[in-house]
Length: 165
Image (cartoon, one colour):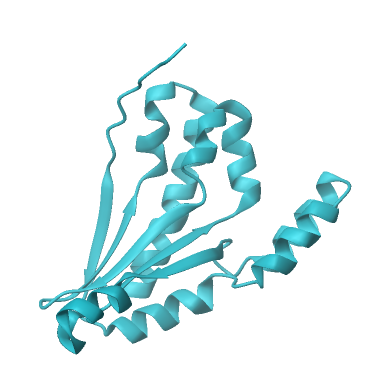
């Protein structure tokens, strides 16, 4: 059976007069940045939920999140536009334990978690953007997953607000 489900996404953004470098440094202080091959090895070796929680808790930063991967879109654009292209960085961040709680109720949450944060430098300011998890999970109508998603949204939005100010 083939199924299509419309999903309306809420994009949350904050702008900052701070430099791209300052904002990125603030983000990096708040999120864990484990060596991902080691993280996945330890996560796979965990035999109990308690052991997995220990692996995750050792990997997250003060914001309760970790970086899975980053994509330097600005580096690609500078090849085309030159050094003045500005910086654009996509960070894929999250917490596997939070994802677990959402996916327990809505398996499709695994398509959206970990989440993407976009930090992009424009002529006017630096923009930090995030697609709210609660908006992505709303069509599924599961109140338990939505509660976890709203908590995640608050966590990510607070992180971005701190990084921007």
